[in-house]
Image (cartoon, rainbow, N blue to C red):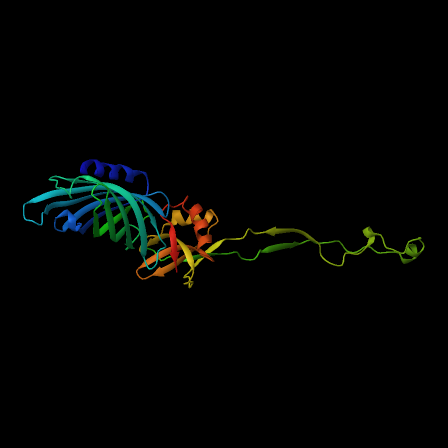
Amino acid sequence: MKKVLLGAIIVSSLFGKTNVSLSIGSNNFDNKEGVDSATTLGIRGDFYLDGLYHMDLGYENLGSVDFENGSGDTKVQRVYTQFSADGEEEYHVVPYMGVGVGYEKVSDEIDELKSQPFIGLGIGFRYNISNNLNFLLDGRALWKTSTRNINFLTSFGVGYMLDAEPINNQIVKEQEIVIPKHKLEIEPVATSAPKQVNISSVFSKSSSVIPIQNRPNLLPVVQSATVQAPIQKVEQQYTNQSNGTYIQVAAYSKFQPRALLSKLTQSGHKVILRKSGSMKKALIGPYRTKTEALNALKSIKKITRSAFIYKG
């Protein structure tokens, strides 16, 4: 059972963004089950369907659980799957909530403690240290379908996000294009001296207007102008924007993700860059409302699947 689950986590992680975590926790059994609380060791893979929703596969080993009457112990193992949804990130903390089903296997069964399916409901928090590394703290309630007993489980884990954008470590800066004025080079053209006009012949005609071809050239004629193509110069400045709803597309401390930022810019997104302690962040926004940001997130995720809502 354990090997099958581990294989499923590894294979599924090859096809998209996955957070793989190892955890340790405490399981409190129902009083009617007649066993002591136990320490749990677990592994879980969270497979992201998009930026907010993910399917989770998990395995937990409770080891040998002692009977309260001192008659011995029994081994307990669990596998489960659940559908979870992330909330909005605040100060690197992402809340999440999930509901799912699982199966508990007991080696030595008694009336109130035996192998059976269960339904799980849980909430938790993920603290993002970086784009890849994170801590998890969650709690779950398990309702066992046969005995109707309820267990409560709390756990702490360390996770690693696979297929996240690489962490780059150069200062994120806002790009601004400055286009200089056009430079015109005018070539003066030498003109011939004005022709002499016979006044008497002019007044002798019915029209008093001097023909165009006989008018004197009073100003030099501009024959051609050479326009030098404008030179685009990219200037980088630190952004002072702080408040608002953004979409974070990258975070780093050394190397700038030039290919990603260029692709986002070419797609019409304005990327701003901001220092955040030792880390630097590439943001798109700000947006006036969270709904507007969520609508923009759908198109940005086609370029980078690790983008998420960031509250500045």
